[in-house]
Length: 227
Image 1 (tube, rainbow, N blue to C red):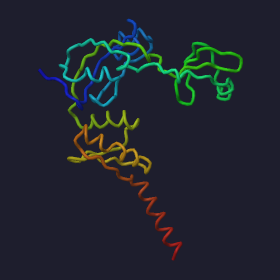
Image 2 (tube, rainbow, N blue to C red; image 1 turned 180 degrees about the horizontal axis):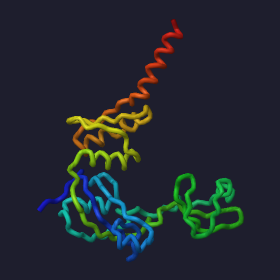
Image 3 (cartoon, helix red, strand yellow; image 1 turned 180 degrees about the vertical axis):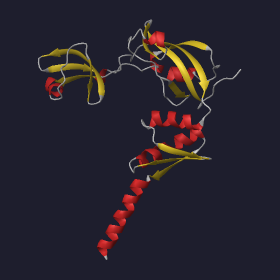
Image 4 (cartoon, rainbow, N blue to C red; image 1 turned 135 degrees about the horizontal axis):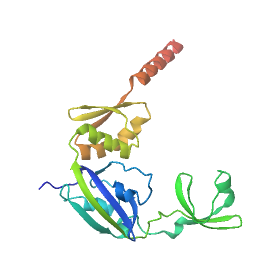
């Protein structure tokens, strides 16, 4: 029977529970318990690379394809423990300047961070930046649907998670070449070792033709200006 290993790219179906209630899922009938309008998304995980909470990540290794598993995840291997320092008092005008209307119990986005409003006292807002599931044990059921075999699909999964975008790329034997604007080069260099680890291929950057042409024209202009 085929089983999974670290660095395998796998597609999974899963549901996460806290206190018997669904908090996350890509299984249609379970997802409807969260929101009737929600649509399930394909979930691809590189085993052992921290793409899901550590307890689930560890459980994905050594498992059979198409077999359903159920696991219990202690909070330390879930979303971690609650931290007192993440409970903060913030002036009310910090919210109002951003056109945010805080109220007790609300979960809001402040400076690109999720924050839960505990209480409001005068011009002060008591907030909690802990993950809502921090300090809580979790349960999961999951099934590994398949191992990915196609390198193009693997590359897309890698880039979507680590780069947050899927850039233009070409696969050439033992290397993958990303073509794009100059700012992407730094991201490519940062993740090239990780890419080699999971893909077994080198990751290279190539300036897209449009940018390369502009760069050459700028050099030519500078050369002519100094003559």
